[in-house]
Length: 595
Image (cartoon, rainbow, N blue to C red; front, side, top):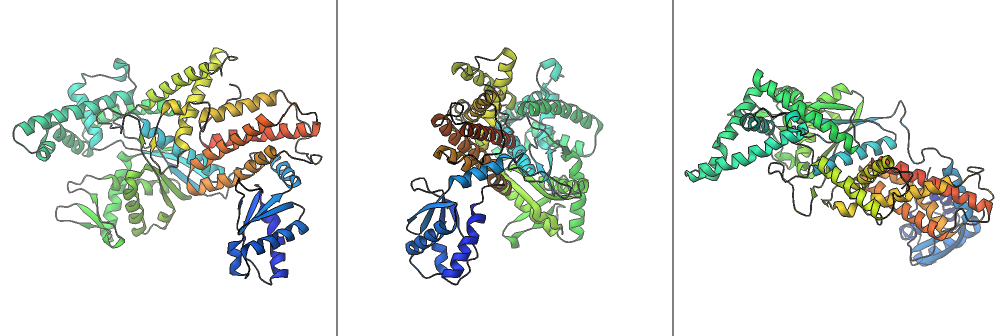
């Protein structure tokens, strides 16, 4: 439940318009009263002038007078031009809080047998490099959207497609063969993904040297890029892999396994998990079968060189390559196969969310359109969760040049900063060493995830690690500290007659604001699910925390002489802590009980 003013006001408003103006109004527009005006709720009068001929201020005055006489919950009103600001009674807010206080898992809907199933894809890394800062945004965003959809009553399957084949994979393999001297994760002391990524960077540096040499011999830059021996070796290796060459496939399996073991450690550090995995090395074959069917149905066409295309110019797009002339697949081939494989595996699937950066916006527009042209009606239920890139103060990251920020290194640095800042501001004085270690990890991940998720997914982020670990302002640690403060308060308090607040008569303005914020939570969760936007949850939690801190600083909770009032304020604090915890869980953030 949420605080639904409309259901209390609409019947009386309908009666007013029917009796006074002989008209039926289909709906009324309500909004929260702006802070510079007195009131809790504002009725926007301008849309009503379509049915009633009157000056907006006069009509607003008449409606206000009627509501005050007819409804006990409306105590006072004021009119500002065409806006009717209503002041709602304390009794109404007390009763609303009494109801929501009793609701377990408030604001979240549990899935049932009839709930629809949605698949959320995120992470989807290449097996030629470790996870980096960009992957962190992808992972925390996809994981959070999955949790938000679950809170809206969906059955959710968290999945990923691992890009374990292609020319980029072969580049790491060629470089390891030529320069690796049989180095392994065990012999090097590196995580497997970091070791393979090292050779991806090595390939690029040696490839550039070869290009420079060829250009010095008179070749153009473009010609040199195509004829560099290293690239030609990687291309040959890709062809051998697709031909199932034993030696190449065995090396591919070995190096991929190194990477998978490294990835699992990174996911554990980040606190994300998956329910299923798909591999491009398997789905691209199914994609090729789809290409054959599309050709037979004349949805696709082949050019003279044997390459396969689809013409989407009538839809305002362009011609799209689906299969190269040499028979090797492209990303679109693989994505077509993956989409159908997932539907085969989960036939009840009612939707799929792809968490992929906005540089792939066009790709997914084409993918969804191709699936629709192939006759798959469920293509309408596919959604591309497009997000902006993550930059550092030093500039854009490039994997092949080794300028990325490794995810594991970043998390370790964040934990170190959390330790330094927490100790400096005295947040850990009462904890033992084990508790401190756990807290530093919790604060670091909370800071990292919140800093990323509070921004609308579509916007680009300039990530500032130091600013993210600040115990003041719109940050994860600020929210975590408020939760710990409330839990400490609750440990010192005992609450009686839970949910029974009939004897409570008067509210402080700060209490009203906290109740209003609590009342918004279910609506925010629903809207976040509709818009696939964890930012709505993150910023709601921050607003709730601000309201509670204002209440805490201005109103005595445990020091009240009035037992009824004290009991109410303890209950209010208890519910705020619960909503902070539940809301943060939707962001993948843990909130500590002590700091």
